[in-house]
Length: 175
Image 1 (cartoon, rainbow, N blue to C red):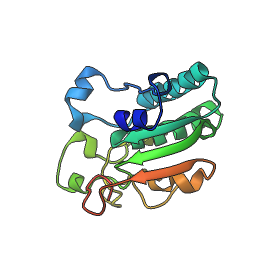
Image 2 (image 1 turned 90 degrees about the horizontal axis):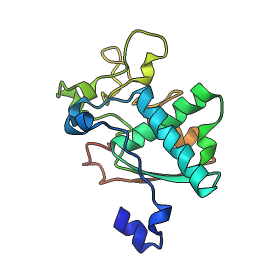
Image 3 (image 1 turned 90 degrees about the vertical axis):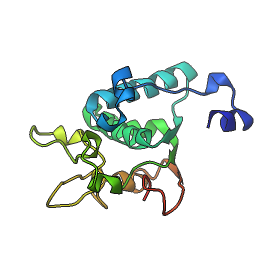
């Protein structure tokens, strides 16, 4: 992606990328979950890029886990901060994001495959990639519709131009 953006005329001072996973989390991909502290790191990063560039909006290019993290981060920042974080985004490029959950989670008992975190009010902002399969595991994020359905983000934010790149129907991440 970096080379493609460079070939399209972008220079290094126009390309930014966050690191929101600790070294331990990068080593254990199966244990990565969506969590508010990760959203806060992503939102701070977006805000810092806007301040650095002097631009009111940014373009987000995200891949895989980064797609759902960025969508959840913008939703979380909007609800937690009272401002419309989505107004900070001009374009959102989804590269193979797991917006529907992962079919492999139906057979893989890893932490990243769980649904919403049960318990405390608002804890459902912590979730994994288990497909929405009520009544077994409720996951409003991977659901077909709802206030925070990842796949409904383009419909909820018509002011943002959304693009999706996928490997097609055989792509377990995107399907």
